[in-house]
Length: 304
Image (cartoon, rainbow, N blue to C red):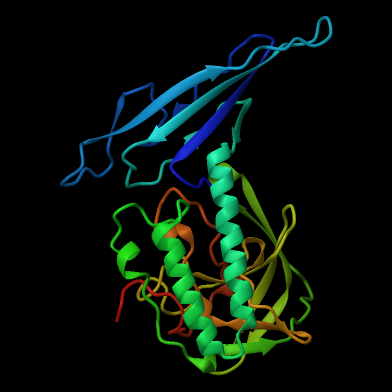
């Protein structure tokens, strides 16, 4: 997922033949310095164009052994000054590699560190309702002030905090992970990040009042992690249509275990970043995690 307002591109050329510039195939592209893009939705208080300031630097070329191709790097840095309000999709030419810039890398590492520390404090609480209040407070602070918050600058939710349903102790479960007779493997296109692969780790049955079985996934990437998205009957109404996340341990969202059972507390369901900002591309709840009953707990779209 492309996080933050700065993206950097390294364009690799072999044999001195420069690859063509990135091509636009949507409303958002990478223009030269100062060129304005038509905004997909100009509105009051914003210019009709979105300006991206571009700078360019070239590293020294290094030659290999005699006859070997020359490797050159061209670093392009784009600062988005007015974020477009519709997602853009880009078609990168062959030989183009997206890399993380140092500022964004450190910010993302800090976000994940803070998230992991918050969930560690949550797991230490003896009272689940107190743990939930702690989580809400910590999450609101991150969403309000962290540079990697998905909330755009000036979003009213930075001041008010994101809305939640009240804590419902009936929606906290400690359940075993049941083996899947025929575990599924999913590949999800996540834009600039490529393909996110999910392997089914098993099934978890959520007792009444939910009374449904959902898939527990393992993120098949470096380090891995458990992933539990849920799309319930509130999706598209009181909650985001793509569903919500309950567990994403690779990013620190981990409620722990109770002996041989995994803790699933639906009061900790939260919206993925793409609910707030189209710059994020998120894996959403697949069919195995869609349930036909409402889960009136966790994060919601609007305050009651």
